[in-house]
Image (cartoon, rainbow, N blue to C red; front, side, top):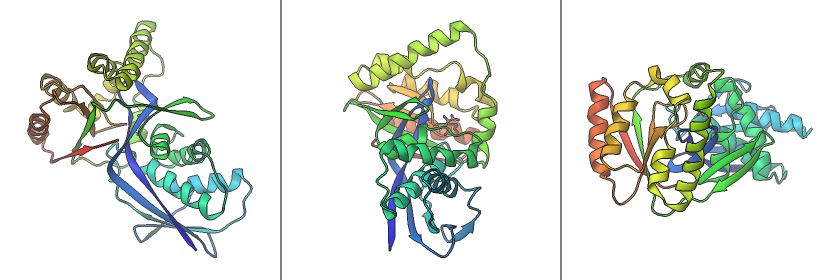
Length: 293
Ligand code: HSE
């Protein structure tokens, strides 16, 4: 018997919510199938891969070990989410694999248990067990990870808001690891207070439909600026998107993709055109994808 699960792409951080907030979107998905075999092996779109260096393999191994389950599993991953673009690709494979394995073995894991094991997979790709993308891929919609346990809660997203992904043609493996190494180890209290206020504005704006709160809330002065060298085009795209009435703009996860939240007042086609031409001036192709969460 083989059990399959799909897991969707996501944008983590949403500005000031580093390792806390994420939003799943329907733009891309991975499909993962798991069945019992003679030994644990992993195939990614047909190609065998090292278990421990792959997020899905590592997540499933963490699950089997923690629950003391003895099973040999063959994991087949069909990648639909492009990797290295800040779209939660590694996290989605891990969530798909843990979800399918849990069902195959009759483990009845809760959403938070799936996140707990899937986040261990992220160590393989970024060096850290960050839970934000896997929480969004597991729960859907917008989520907040409230403790390492992990405790995860969904944030209702007001129906006025829609999402646009700007995906530059600049894939880089190992990018999240590099991006995390750029984040400052210490910050001054003033920055902490301003960023915390924005995080509160963002959550309230997202759920109440108050676009002014959301617009203010999606500004981050700690993580995004520290990673600027990885996406120098971001600030210009953000400025122009806000001038065209975007409800909020942020880097998607560790970038280089950009998430734009829009509503009926936003000139979305104008943003797509401007972003495409800005990225072209940086020598990059662009794909824009409208999505729902
Ligand atoms: N919160 C993580 C980071 C997400 O920004 O490093 C990576 O996709």
